[in-house]
Amino acid sequence: MEQPCGVCMGKRALSIGLPSNIDAEERRFPLTPEAVAVLVDKGLCVRIQAGAAAPIHYSDDDYLRAGAEITSRDETLQCDIVAGMPALRESDIRTMRKGSMLLTLYNSYSGNVKALQALSDRSVTSIALDLVEDGGRNRPFADILQEIDGRAAIAVASALQADPIQGKGILMGGVAGIVPCEITILGSGIAACAAARSASGLGATVRVFDNDVYRLRSAMRELGSTVIGSALHPHVLEGALRSADVVIATPMRHTVVIGTDLVGVMKRKVIVVDATMVHGQVFPSLPVVDLGRGCNPSDGDGRKCLCNVSGRVPRTAAMAVSNALVTLFDDIIAGAGTGSAAGLIRMLPGVQPAVFSFMGKIVNAQMASSIGTRCADLSLYLSLS
Image 1 (tube, rainbow, N blue to C red):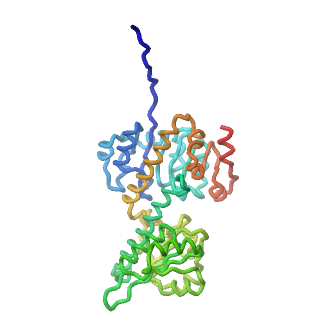
Image 2 (image 1 turned 135 degrees about the vertical axis):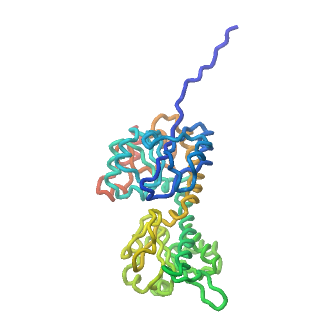
Image 3 (image 1 turned 135 degrees about the horizontal axis):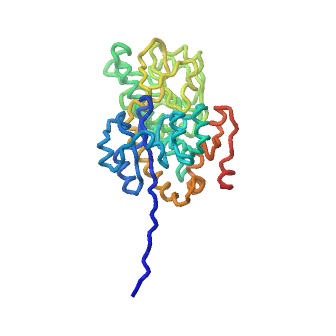
C-alpha cells in the first residue's frame, strides 16, 4: 500500500562570521576551536578569517579540525551573525548583510559616530555582549570579564613592580623583615573581590573601599579578615592612596572620581589600573594606556592609568567568553525560527537591554547621548514589528 512520505524542506544553516581584529589592536577573540566544534555540532556554520585567531595562539588548522571554514574577511562579514570584540571599520560594516546581527562589546562602539552611523545604514542589529542578562538579571559576559580584569590587574601590577629597571624591583608580598606592598581597591564587586583574593594570596596588604555598605559587607564576608574594608571616607581614602603601591578602580554603583588633589598625594611610581567600563573616568587627570592595544606601560615618564588589562591574557578571555557564547547561541538557535531579528529579541528578554542598534536606529540611551543623537524606543519597535 502506498504510504504518505514525510518531506523535509531544506533549511539554510545559520552562519557565524569571525573576522580578524583590525591592526592587532585588540588581542581578545570571541570563540576558541573547542567552542566552534560545539556550535558546528549544533548545526551552525562557522566561518573564520584566515589567521584571525593568531593573537590567542590558535592556528587555522585547529579551527578546520573543529569544523569551521577558513574564508576571506568579506565572507566572514557576510554571515548572519558577526562576532568580534573590537569595533569594525566603517568599510567593514558596509560589507555586512542588511539586517544581520553583530555581537561585540559596549565600549568598542560608545562614542564611535561613524561606526554607529554605518550600523544604522545597514539596519544591523547590534548587541553588546557585556550587557546581556540571564534569568537572574546577572550579566554573565560582563561578570567573567570583570573577574579576569581583577586577577589580571594584580598579575600585571606585580610584574611591573618586580621590573628592576622600569619598576621598583620589589615583590608585591613581603618577606621576613620587609613590609609588604599596599593595594587600594575602589569598589567591592566581582572584579574587586578577584583582585583582592589574588593580592592577599601574594601576601600584600589589601584595602577595599565602597560606599555601598551592603555590597561591601558581602565582599568582606567572602574575602575574610585578611582584607580591610572601609566606606569612602575622604580622610581614610586619602591616607590609603598616599601609602598605596597599587591602586585599582573597579565597577561601582556610584562612580568615584579621583581628582588631581588626590592623585598628587600618591607615590611617584604608583601603579594605577582602571578596570571599569568607561576607561579614564575615575582618574581623569591621568593619561590612559590601553594594554589591549599593545601599549607599553613603561613608555614615558609620570603616572599612567592602565586599562583593558584582560588584553594581556587574551587566551583566557577567549576561553571564558566562548563558554558564555555557546550558551547564548543555544537561545539564538531556539529563536531562529521566528524568521526576524525582532522576533528573536522578543523571545530573549535578557538580550533586550544589550541591543544598541536596531532597524537603523540607536536604541541605547547612553550610546545615543555619546554621539549626540536621539534614542529610539526598542520596545516600541518590537511591538510594531
